[in-house]
Image (cartoon, rainbow, N blue to C red; front, side, top):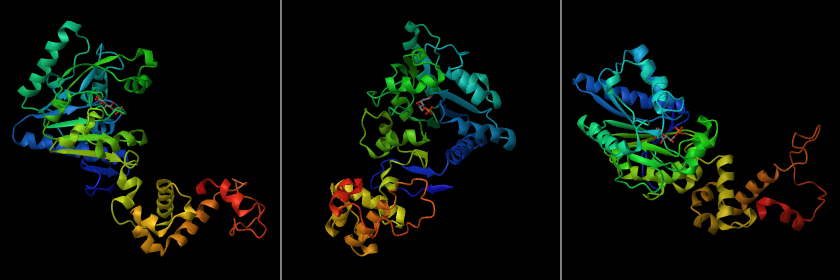
Length: 368
Ligand code: F6R
């Protein structure tokens, strides 16, 4: 189920667990949450959970509902604090996070209504500051968050802490980033209907949680996830602040992991099991890195490019170059659907080439 769960520490500064499918990761997260709830129950205590909205946690909530309905997981001892809410926003509006949380989780479990906390998007502007301070205080009064569940926005936001947010920020009213507004437009029919502001827990509020799980599913999150996990800590990517939290896990599917070095260029991380596909990726990568045509790559280039391991396997650069060049060349055809009744096993080395080697290589993208 987990495709790669060993800790990678050369490039990754956060512990990442990669699942083949988002649904598998969601089940694992729900199991951990259930464990916390049951553990607290046994001690006669409340479990205090920080919750997120959006598409990322839906699978987790579905599994929690299943555990409640089929495996008698009770939420009677659970207190929740949601990360954020659009501002202004009425609770009965379809886009409100109050509506979302009830529909996706609360209406299907035995949580007590008085234990649910979601930032109030109906406040008058002059009430906001005091309300936010009280929200922070309520979390403290409950003993702090046992676990905070997070999604990540394409801006790198956690909650609605957009780029520029301070690591010590607390619950407050914020302006949404234009990219976040674009991403939210799907829920509001038109971009112009998306509120420009939101109430959100701060980065500092989130960082005080005793345990944090950040989820990311799908290729659209791959780039920001790589920056979060492998980049330096910076307010340009607020999720990168998580690197200084002592108890955080990043749970992703194979698509969100695509830009991580261990997936994208695994030869930079350690020994690889080389197959034709990986060899081809590595040689194309080296050609781009060295800014040389594939056929001109030398043994030295392979060694300098951290590919000496591949060299050992294949013997020498000459053989590797030819192998990959031919494989790529073989994909070029005037008959994309296949030429009927033809045998192109030897293609492209025909007996009577119609173009000179020189003009052919000048036209071939892999040699430029
Ligand atoms: C929502 C929240 C946001 C989302 C993030 C990802 O409560 O705090 O940070 O987690 O925008 O959204 P999805 O999951 O829809 O991709």
